[in-house]
Length: 392
Figure (cartoon, one colour):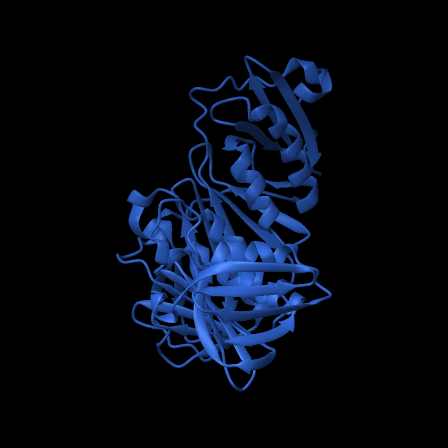
């Protein structure tokens, strides 16, 4: 095997394949390898996997001798990252080693036969459906972070992909927040419900930018994403995803509407103090023409802010986790946000207000007021403690 290609293109392909390798230590040596294949027609492919997730990246170069071998993936990625992106990289086999020439640098890495690559999930499935890449990335970014990270929670560790005849929906929850995103997508087979690992969607959000339409393939136990020069395949998670519709509140709510950036910035400021409390609680009261927010901790002190907002019904008092609320508001793409507060113990539903064709909804479970000092801070001044004037 012997080939040369631009270092910049080699870097992107190597980095992509290495994304699928396990990050933890003490794994099987075979799972540290990236398989490199140089084809006579000039195609060069890099493949990496952790058995549950696999990435194949393809580039083109000058192939002098076709062939295949396996190299240590993380070292290969580090070398690519430190090489001059404006130069050329040559990789060729020398017995049991892979020689890498990049600029003035020369590397000799231990190599293994191509057969040592353990392979990833089978990418076969039903007929592919074309999804706009920016739509898929936006949905992934709004949902994937909300999945549970506790391995004992089974399907809740994944993201539900659900189809109708006209739309694709993604849902994730960990019992403290729920994220839902739905986009119109004709041509799907209705009734598909697959639970996919968040790693697939998080990686897609990073790697698919600017690559154009994506082919989505849903198999019986795998899901695949393919775009020119890149293929991502993951095994689906076993088990039935719970009926998330049962936890969405349906009773009348107090509705608060205001600019997304205004609320996000206020939450971030109050969170600087709220994070010193175990619950990281921000207390909010919606009434009149605004939203009053504060936190009170015994060790650090207090923070208080009032923001103007359109409030329908109320007043209502509720508490939420500062970190979760900040993450949710950071996922809202619309300029205005609508917050529906279903009492102090009901869910807090959040969605963007605008022309975004991707319908997204987030639900945050409230923090119990029972163990909180809900007194509004006196340090905010007399005007802050008085109710805001009623809406005209």
